[in-house]
Image (cartoon, rainbow, N blue to C red):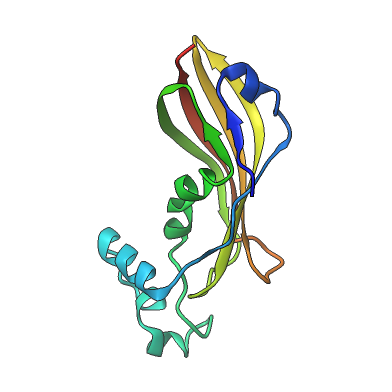
Length: 154
């Protein structure tokens, strides 16, 4: 898989309205779900109790929605390599919609488009359209816009 390399605002801007690519599939296993539950103090049984979850609405445990969102930095780095930056800031999330639960051992893949880009007095504000695909499912786990600020060296 090739990674798109971007080193300036001008290079980023050339991709406006286009797909930036997709990540590899990533499997979400029960130990990751349990660790996330512990870190976020959210041990709801639908996530952490496989026996009880067998009788739940999904027939198995599911990943926390915010666990799937927290994978964005990891999956994003598989799609685009941003060089020549002093700093990157996660600026926000807009219009996030959870569409489908990710079952334990489910595999997810991030698809990203560059929806808008602006130069804010030398800081690049990139709004990335994101869709998290679940392998074998028609509906994505979520869709939304993620906003990053890039402080390029130029």
